Image (cartoon, rainbow, N blue to C red; front, side):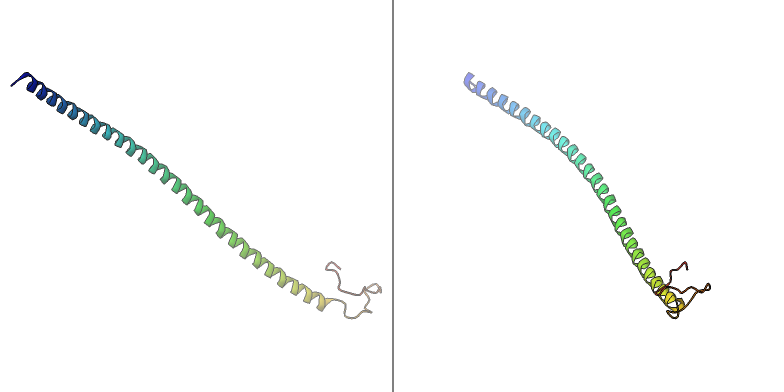
Length: 121
């Protein structure tokens, strides 16, 4: 083998060795980058889970508040119905127990004013 052929073989062998070293270093770098990306993605997933749990709690509070508001509205309507019923009963009571005629007098002999009487009279 001549010197030129030997140099070509050594150059080719050196090139193959450099390519192999470069390929293994690229593979190791790729592995490190993938580990970093996976770690970052795991952190992002963890933060998303925490955010979703917080969102679920907020949605639960909103639903609870809506239920409470609906209960309050039902109670208000019930109280209004009771007030209307009491108003009708009171009106009937005043009409039934009010002055029977316009010329009625009280126990002192004074005339009572026309119209419905006050509750405290």
